Image 1 (cartoon, rainbow, N blue to C red):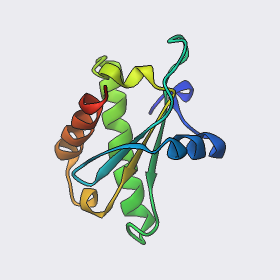
Image 2 (tube, rainbow, N blue to C red):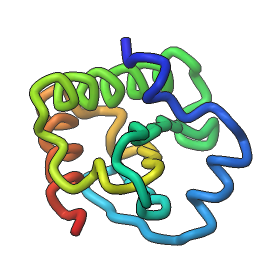
Image 3 (tube, rainbow, N blue to C red):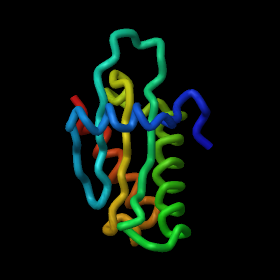
Length: 118
């Protein structure tokens, strides 16, 4: 499980991240990027979203969120996050195309999204 200090929970924080309109897409997953941090002491907060419009079954939506969260946790553990740590918040949004992917495909998608950040 992703440690508490890395979780994006606040509705206002989600809205602020979406408002910046800095996004990247890769194989059914969109990464929204928040503001750049002024101090690098605070950890980057991360949120994972799969809309009810993507699939009506909660089991399918939660599975995709779990896979994305676990991928991010493993990259955090291995310190493979690159430039993503210079931002205040990240939101990964899963779409219908990502529902049929396995763990390796989702891992590659998220890795590609993180590498795209400047």
